[in-house]
Length: 294
Image (cartoon, rainbow, N blue to C red; front, side):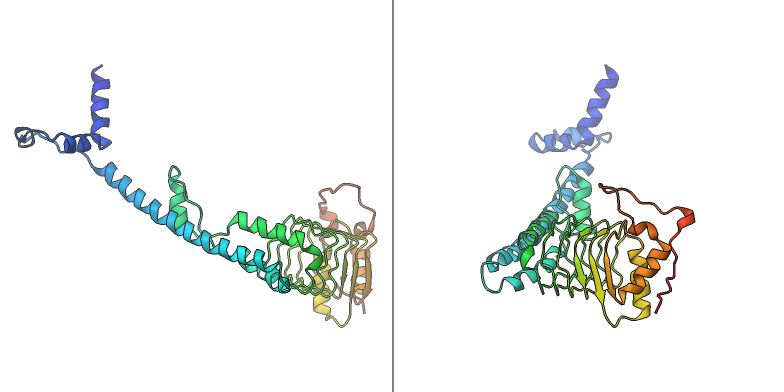
């Protein structure tokens, strides 16, 4: 019992409750004047007070930023019903990438610290909402500026993306079946594990486009006047796809087709019905340099 009493007494003092109690019921002067008198511990109260202040700052900072992002998103939604809807669609990627601090939670101190001092990310709910907006307007995305847009897992089948700017866009796991991508700018776009069945990429700029694991089936590539260096880079990226079954290569892409048929003939074999994890065996390692036949 003595140990329990000492522990409770220590807890009463260290937690700051003793200090609060002394403020409510001050001790007699003879007690405080005693040389053996120990003043109440206040460190916990100081720490709690500083944390509450930090949380208040983090919460206000988060709410202010959310208000700005939501106002920008709402202005886009309002403009979609006007003739200037394409300008509104072109602003989506900028709003998606607006920096936003992490939401702080009072009972999770690390979220408060990260909200104040960690690098800002993006607002995931707004990103998803704007992505769904683009899915709903997928038949009217021609010539729209979607550079840096987050379209991961988006369903853009039968979409009209001709002449669209998709530089650095995230199209990972996106469905682009029968998508019109003619003259689209796909430089540095991420199409990893994307599905492109019967997609038309005629004259699309796919330089440095990431096709790793993508399903390109019965699609169309066609271009004129492309340099050898660019063709080699495109060939390397297309070699990382899971399939190129019945994909049509015209113009300068015919050289890429010959190289891939020679070095990666498995790409042109009919794939299994469901997606599978393709792994290159050591004996079938991808060549680092493709020599495009003239």
